[in-house]
Length: 177
Image 1 (spheres, rainbow, N blue to C red):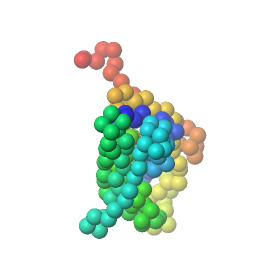
Image 2 (cartoon, rainbow, N blue to C red):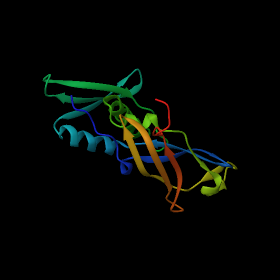
Image 3 (tube, rainbow, N blue to C red):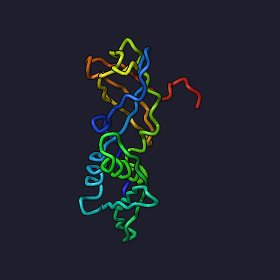
Image 4 (cartoon, rainbow, N blue to C red):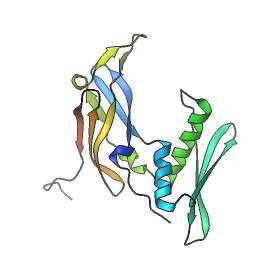
């Protein structure tokens, strides 16, 4: 069975998860197009397929990959959750991305460190509803992944053009092994 490559920095998106007066937390994610591109690249456009079905009122996606050695389709399935924008489309996309995680695509995102950006690196404002908010956009500047684990990561605030987060989880020379 094909092993899928690690995600590149330009394939990882950042979403603001929490906004407080003293900073924001960031989550890393991939979109469905990223999964499609990696599937096409690894097994070819005819080497995978997907279908959706409703089970107990929930939308599931099954992604199948052709295993040339076994001469059979290997499938992984998962359920999606609704998005705020488009209910059905969001559920379909989410279930597809989750099924791709089950195949191993982007699984390294689950090893991301907690990403906290202090308030002095973010434009934090009071929103119309009285809650703190930010309109700043963030991106992954660089990432190093080893054995499906994020070892190093840097995040840019695209709005200010500044690096706002750096993580280095590599063992130091004097760390005990």
